[in-house]
Image 1 (cartoon, rainbow, N blue to C red):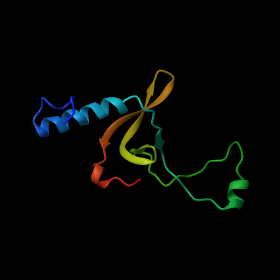
Image 2 (cartoon, rainbow, N blue to C red):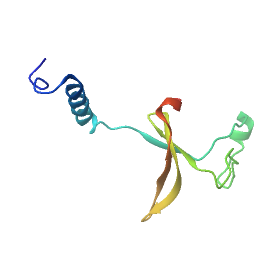
Image 3 (cartoon, rainbow, N blue to C red):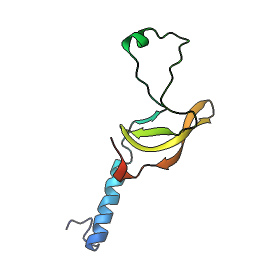
Image 4 (cartoon, rainbow, N blue to C red):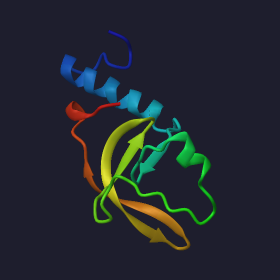
Amino acid sequence: MNDMTSGFPPAAAADHMVAGNFRLLQDVDVKLTVEIGSTQLSLRELLALGESSVIELDRQANELLDVFVNGTLIGRGEVVTVGDRFGVRMTELVNPDKRAG
């Protein structure tokens, strides 16, 4: 055993090491993305878009938005305003066993 964990029982030593690893990672930047919906367009439809075009998405207006971290779905939420900016209020987190990245 190393000096960091020598005073702990084996399970506690493992927990201590995991906590230390999380502290090392907590300042790592990740990309958070919120998806309101999607659609498929032909190239013809894409080229016909103009400034006043409306693109219909595959999601109902009352559905929650998908929240991704580095491309992995982590939860769902709803749009809120924070001052003059948009934000997302997390309403549910996805079980890690059911995540698809």
